[in-house]
Image (cartoon, rainbow, N blue to C red; front, side, top):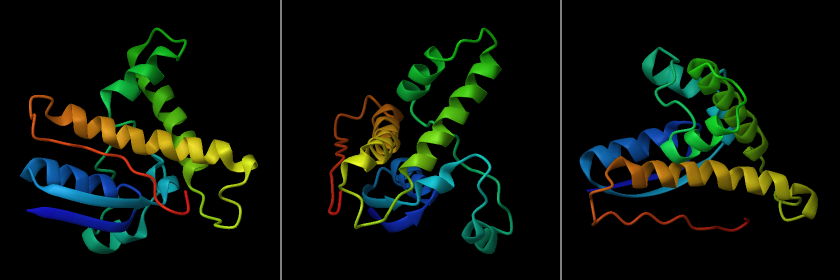
Length: 147
């Protein structure tokens, strides 16, 4: 089995990854539109296909990134820490949502490229954490043009 997604907006990329992990299928995912990962972003495609618009995935996905983001929040309440780390992820996703091809490699957009890398590393780490005992799983994050 193989799952392939191209230009899967927002959490659609993550839904493909989760379904492939569940089915133990191989996959190739070319993600986009990171700004739609925000907790408050509504996706018209989700509404059209399901009649609802509830998020199926919470961010950050990986335990590794979540623990890092929680560790940087100065608050004792666990729920408040999780909300604060989710807000931080929202800001990262917003910054990562950039596709002006003429400007993408300019130094002024280095932060946007770094934000996109954080989003994609979160996906990679989630996949690696999904079943750490599966020695056959090989997850690779590659860079594609224009990045």
